[in-house]
Image 1: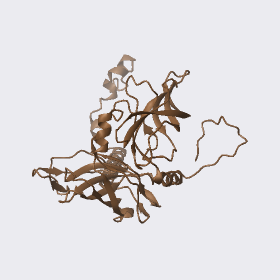
Image 2: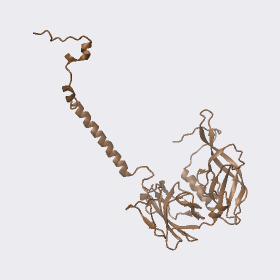
Image 3: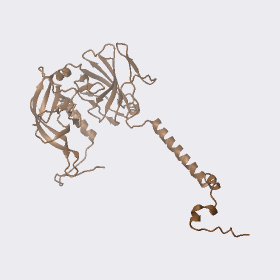
Image 4: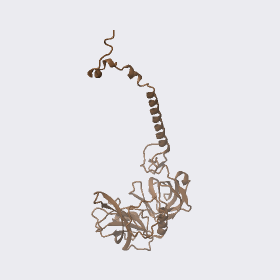
Length: 369
């Protein structure tokens, strides 16, 4: 089913629909050779331009430069009829000039637009094949943490460990929604276990909620992931990007190379794909890990993307059946007069009914001899 609010173009043209996953796959394949990787879109308070886009370099032979990029801008508009804020999509080709950049030219900021477009951007999308890792409808952040328009934060990204994915196994993902990633780092990692880590895909339209375990050599990673959105057997591509801690603000490492899984496979939604914070409580189902200081982080996740577990649904159904049964019994007893017997025995004789007496009803038995 397709709902079209309105069409302002020439209706004599041909219109057609295309599978969204196919569109994403084509885009991801085109971006495998992209020279730049996406970091952030932002519009901090007082910013003079429309928004900025921070990028890191994938190909050292390509230089940052001023360029024109076509975006689809999802922006806020006010309805004159309702006086309510609504969103609209507007395609714009913006001139993006080179802003702050690192001396080694590994990361830079592009300042896009003039700031006089008269729109308040909320999200941005682009099919530009030169920028890998740009999410679908990427949010334009106003509260930035970290703020990659600042050179010091660009240096932070540049100095991150670079992790390379070596293998990915489905681990019966079509049955349990789980898969494993095996990777290595070019630098020693300063943690042994991290949970609640989100690793998005370029395609299919899903992501993984992962636990990262680092082996004793501090460079070998085994990443156990739970799938967040079901997908059929398809080509899985993980684009170049920065991977953040569970707070989605602290960068852990960067993936500088796109990775394509060696085998296509399908995945269901994992029952453990709901993001929750670390817990200090013990649980027999909770995997434990110790850091170098001996402290134990107990990580647990429960629930599912569907909202309720099977046990919870069964409990609700049993409760509803019990309530229906009780109501049925009450109705049956009421029809048999079980509840009216006591009330009938306590009825006041009609002769002494004060309401009838007020209307002059005579006792016909009073003159009977």
